[in-house]
Length: 329
Image (tube, rainbow, N blue to C red; front, side, top):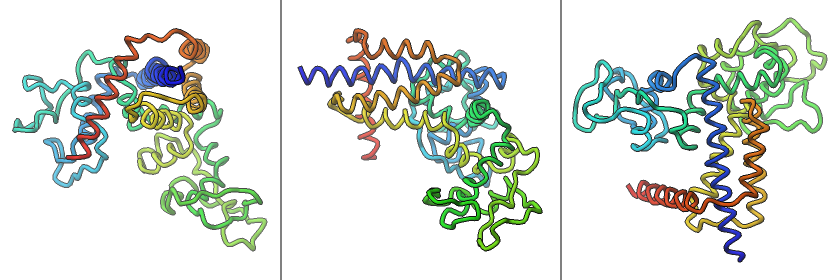
């Protein structure tokens, strides 16, 4: 009986990921497409070159002479084939050289591809790498301030993302500084300018109070200046990005990388609570919280679809085997 409960717990977590987390992330993707007035195929085409180099580190036909693809290889061939028309007869981008072993580069997105065609892993990849703007739009709406106001209110924290090891004039007892610097001096100066203000505690060597955000600075303008800085700020501050990353970690740790297909009752309660918190935070951003709560409640207490559960387990075991083979290559 205990073993059956552990197995049921595993299937309910799988269902929470497949039937709740994935559709909610899909709604966030759809919201972003609507915001930028793009179809999903056009969006994929816009990012085709970068997407390809998350699959291959070799230079492709579109790489310029000085290009040196440096993306982490997060995608597999089957994922590229989900997104793009990859058969030999499909149209390729201008400049493509038809050579052996180059049939996956320069492809166009599948004309009829929909957000719903993507599983959680692929959706997470697209959102994390290409939808930074959506994270900021949702964050600033909930924050109820402009990007400039956000920078000014977070000035102290941002100062210590640059200078983590030194107390400044604003630091108070109990303030916890970061363990390492996330931005450098040049990046900090892309956000802030010095004012004429005189520090009220001049004895301090480090004065964060004399800075203010560059007037009128927007997220889009900063993105043009320093994309790496934008990524760093997004990773550190934007809750939706953290939620999606957290769901991905839970998926990998408890769902995709376990052959036993079991979750103990103790682990289940903690895991369920953590995942639901993330799902509902995304649901709020896409105005779907009430329905999401109803579906989550049903997922936890409703009957299990054993045919679907068996399908999930087969898919996940296949993924585990593929990952093990990849490590040996």
